[in-house]
Image (cartoon, rainbow, N blue to C red; front, side):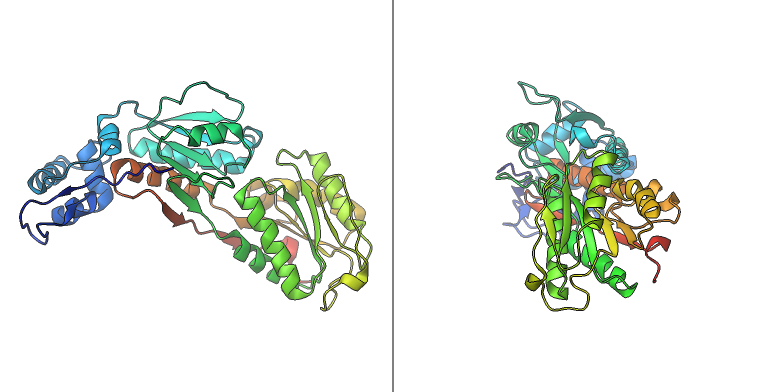
Length: 370
């Protein structure tokens, strides 16, 4: 987006550890004051839990070095709005994952004495929101509101990359494909030979990464893919219909389709590998809540199918049996996005900064070895 938040000035003379021609940034001030860059930023903008003595020390160092924050940093310090904007896809606001993500953003903003304005894709507006910066939660490609927000010039951080022409000033992302491969390896070790996948469309970077990771794993293990795509706002009926469709695929065939369509491939197209074209004996559900919708159906059908989810939740933890899931740690992800935005605003991080958000695999009884 070309909005850079890295304000600096030049030191006019030698100071402790500072050369005469060295740019003076917030990092320089923090180093000279003997504090972290976050503490230095908080001290200069008058927010956060910083003692008065520390504030005075940082202010004196900044003045001595001739540090001049850029426009974004001055904007933050003056708190012209005292608010950041948070956008999440409207169809996903009922998801427990996104509610946890929202709380993470709100809690981190409160630590900076900031409020949060929630913006959804149903809110079309003729003007830019009155906020100092934006957090975009898993932005969907083709969403006109996201496109409009990214065109405002406001400093922006996205959780996962935006699958479009623009990119946010900062990105907090997770390595989903390797984690999915780890989950699929676990299913294989538990006796499964042909796992299937229910995934939302590729409008989001997360869903596309999961889909791509599954296909790569199948290719490297000689397994014919079994994929059913559903909409991002899929109902329980739609998810259950997708599961039934995968259970009905005959051995030696593959299904890689959007919702409502099928395509079968003869077994001669199958790559080499033990059991690569047999019936589905494990199911990975990518959309949040999908695994808990599918579990009763598998029991009623008497299907001997291992079950896992790409999104952990209270539902997966409390299911009977508890469902193996990938813990995306949404509260921490929201907090990381908000913190990166404040660092962009203060000049503590440059535009183009990307941060890896760690995720975890929680193995539970639903995938116990056969």
